[in-house]
Structure formats: structure tokens, C-alpha cells
Length: 119
Image 1 (cartoon, rainbow, N blue to C red):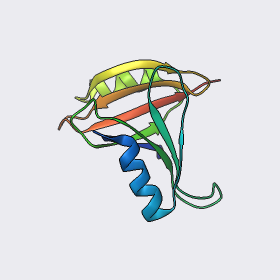
Image 2: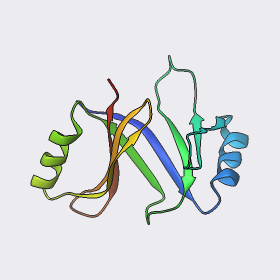
Image 3: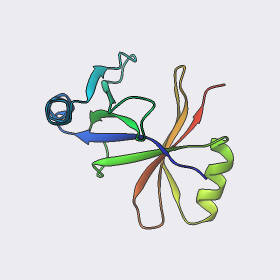
Image 4: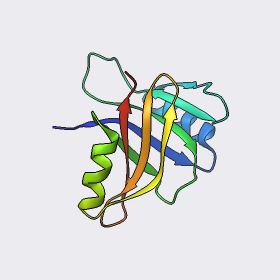
């Protein structure tokens, strides 16, 4: 069974919003430093406790929070999503040393991400 592995909070001022969550919940927020995309990683707790980590980025889509699910094959999952009434919204894109990622919309237009990890 596939489970969410990452969330993204999209904001007009992602650094300010990241600072808010850091101050309120004690999340550790750090600039990803991943090249031309401004992105902050959020560690929400210890790896040995239930939960997922995420990130903050500039709002480029209408939805404010996007959950990402990890899959073995992005290509196969894309076929299943499209056959079931969903559609590709953006991507796929390579995330260096992480994997291949794409955003999709389900049949009601709700966005979610899918990530195939790098080998």
C-alpha cells in the first residue's frame, strides 16, 4: 500500500510561512540549496517516529498543500492515473539525487505528487 512520503506547502512568502511553522511546532527548516529552485525542507520530527517531512515553496499552483506518494515506477503509475480519470499537471522532472517527480490532478482536480526514487 502506498503512503504519503512528503508534503509541500505553497505560499506567497514561503520563508515567512516556514518561520511560522518552525516557531509554533519546532520544525527544523533549512534551505534546500538545490540549484535554480527556491525551496525549504521541513523536518517535522525524528525519523524513528510516525509522520512525514515536507517542504515550502513559492505558490505556482492553486492548491496550497500537496501530498506526494512514493512509487516504484512513475511511468506505470502515470498510465494508471490517466486510465482512472486523472491527469498530469506538471512534470515529470528529475530532482537531483532524489528521483523523478510529477504533479497530478485526480478526477475532482485535487493535486497530488508522485515520486519514483533515484536508484
